[in-house]
Length: 446
Image (tube, rainbow, N blue to C red; front, side):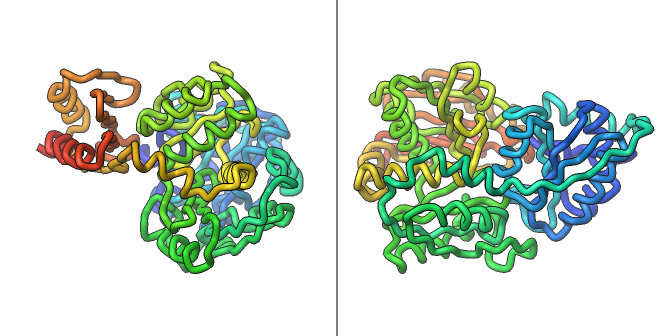
């Protein structure tokens, strides 16, 4: 069948409903998934998007038509879906477009936890099977059974900390009418904290704000509420719940690399000398704090299809990305939104400090540009131009190009899905960071 090839991304399948993805393609993807992996049973979940019920039904029809049985776990967050695939030891598909706007639909596909299908391993194979109509009828129709695994998930994540050691902290949590609200309430009922919820009910019409807390407009209400409530901390989750973001007690957004550094050093108190993985965009704060704490910090390419295997290869206990993905060995190596929220509550309780107190030393040493995107016609050519302009620095090619000097460094990499270059730069002073950011952007945009 004809299908827009652009929906087959590096990490998932994602496109606009019904123009790029619809019930017909959902059924075909279900059939192709069975043809490709030949599973006996498949876990299926979905998010709260308005197109979700129809896409879910068609996906299940394709899977069962091709002979696979389906374990339907219903409307869940992505970390609940990962929990299901891991504990049931089954591959899976979740109907979700993550933090994309409401008109999008898509699929996240697990081969065998913690490994997802990716562009290099599986997703392009599915595309070829769909395009070739290459799913012959199996002669068997699979069965569907429903499972509610929310209680097991709750016990699993709460068991990763010691709730008895938590202080009665005031928490404001904004789930943006995405998938985290129901299970967040269930988890936090078991904690001695005071939870104020914002937009906890799943609603695919998104009546309040968008699903990506990286965008300032989607976290502004939470930042204001943290200050108004005199809360200890604010937590934000993206639409499907695999990304996590924090607001400190001053109402300030906490960069993902600073959270990686703080959680990494805290987890090293539990497990001395352990290995932690971080992505190429991160601040020097991550390797420097982890090494000071006696841990091993290893740099890796951006994306779960690189971070997760590296964690397993190196025996890592934790991995963090600038984008708010946090991976935990003790949660099947998967990324979760709820788990880092619990780690931070335990960290603040046991240290008896405010989050701002932990952040202030970092803010005085590490000055971050944040990720700056530039639309370009020739991403590869622009990266080469940047590399030539800064060839007198230490040049590395872990992901895109990274260049380091004694008192500043940067990474420039191409987007996997758009004609964009993404710049992250850090300096040892604010003035240096601002000067060099303008300078590098000048090369990118020339």
